[in-house]
Image 1 (tube, rainbow, N blue to C red):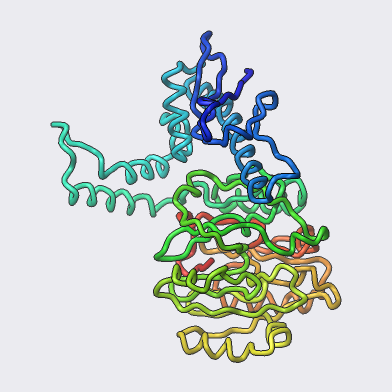
Image 2: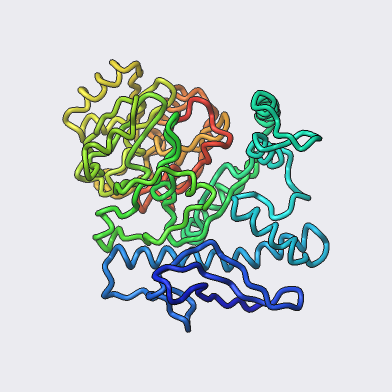
Length: 429
């Protein structure tokens, strides 16, 4: 099916983009819910012009919008395919439009016919305040709240869908790692959503869930990308149903550069806020800036230390690399955390490698997926895993992660866990 993208009002400064295609034997027009600057539109390519002479911010905006247009165009095909499979026949135009609206709202399925129990409960909970009784009267708020609570309790008895997110680049660049992860994800009976893109380090550009405050979307433009050795694509995709709920900040920050829970926010010194007043967004929480070693090119914290319940876990090299580590540890103790040192098995002289780093784990349910290596000292690795299991009191699932660890990141870097999914209640980001 050929889809043509056109501007709704080409003479306006900004305008919506319309998709035109043949459906059910008729020429149809569909709004893509995307607004673009008209002067940048390339009618031949049906995309925005991206020129080297453009200001860097304008160029990035156009690249992001082009990526969104590609995703919308693909979504048209996906909705038709999904509805055809669910209905057993080609959908009508009204059915397609309803499915399209559902997907734009972030629904898991274009059709309601094959929703899982959890998916139906999700939708019921979201729509409950607007439901009416048999007389067409809106339910009293207390009744709606009761229905939400009852269905939430039922929902929590079952595994929730779309828990883990990875980028397609992980599958393409690290096939052995993906093979191990895919098998374990299947065994854990959780779903994994693959988002498009060429940057496997999904943790750094996805939203950050800050307990009690919500989802925060920082600006992804790390300084280390200026070095060709570490450069990754900054044209990244965040699912719309997550993006629209985010508090968006004009603050350059990688997701691996901060650690948060219900009490504290730990910030890497390599990602300072452009204005100190921006720290006010973390209202009610203790905020602590942690210096990082000059050898750590990303400036990330999630390989150095982690928060788990009221435990402050850190790798042994923190005391060597960071001169005031004892002061940091003492402050965490003052705030009610138990500092626990976890051995590492890092390879001497390979500062850019994350091999032998075990705090870059991911927790799903009551299990911790932990990166392991075939290229480090096996005795040191075993000591580290024993100490980590004792600290977490969870079953450790060892995932061979040398493929990505050689490039400086491990499991926490290449996976993002939906905060509304099957998280262990003690888990922090």
